[in-house]
Image 1 (tube, rainbow, N blue to C red):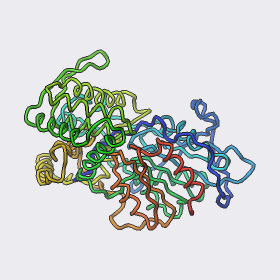
Image 2: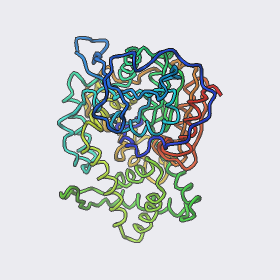
Image 3: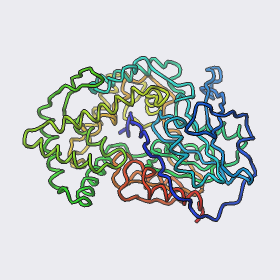
Image 4: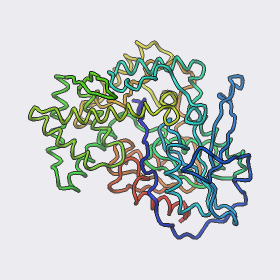
Length: 495
């Protein structure tokens, strides 16, 4: 079962909370000077990063087929504040997605959060190929943000159309290619090793870089982590939601977990048997939305898949309770909030988020229960058979079918994708990863990349430290405790 054909990115409100400097016994300085080692110019259009220097590299779209042409990958360097001494290293963050701009969307937040380390360390921001400043990739099929309000089948059709519109480019945006782009930038800057910091999908990217370029890794932080070959059956995320409901009730004292779970399950069964619809308004236009069990599962999942928000999580509990009495208005309000948030992400434009890259990456890299070489009808039959084989006893609150096809995490989203013969994981199961310092973090309220996935992500490496951050959602970099752990780890990676 596929992990997810679509991951709405974490649009970071606070990537790393600004923290006091962490006392450190600094690592041995390295001899390079990042800013003077490549042709860089001031980033005049980045007022939030006044010292940033911008550059770019031209890379092959397909390194195995140079005749396919080139694409431009843009990066920005935020130099350390003390240039009188050698750099202690270069931190390379990625906010996830896939498809989120690192430079414009997350760059200022990373710079603020990493400030305590930047007296002696540089920060390198890269917009992955097809994202933001790096020859942003778009599909005409994805041009209308109101597609967020469509049915599952309508969304699957649009994704397939996008894949066919990409044509020969459909296989060019896998994570392995992005990792190699990063290494081309590293080489252009004459850097020896990198300190990697990945959030969400960034943990997938940074693990892939470490596997492909092991000699170039100094340390790795994986926040909101999942492993490259993770179990995508949906069971772990389902269990994480179930657990998070209990934690929220226990910690706030404002609900009883058993009651909340019962109310959510009751509404799920009701919508499974009797789906309904309602009208929502977005940007002065009205849209008819199907409210079924899948939509309800997606809403609950979405509110436990971002930064922890106790108020919203308690509102979910109250909405489920109201629905048991026949009042669906609070549920419809939460569904509206979830859907309009997604539409606003789409409307932000490819400079902030390329959903074409999101699909091109996930449909290329993540496991499937069907073969792209088969017809759409056969793919669909194989996928539906795999869903039907899921054991309902291993899922709570929702039916397996509703859960694994829920909005934003529909395992069948790529059913109409073109036949990409190169599609597959960026490296095989059991591939060796470097024995370098690794810190993997998970939030105990995160149902996006659950704690079980974080442990699996840490286990990919020979020696890694795993920490579950209490009260954190997706990802722990958005919390003071997570920030402190990251800053301390980068300062003392071998402790």
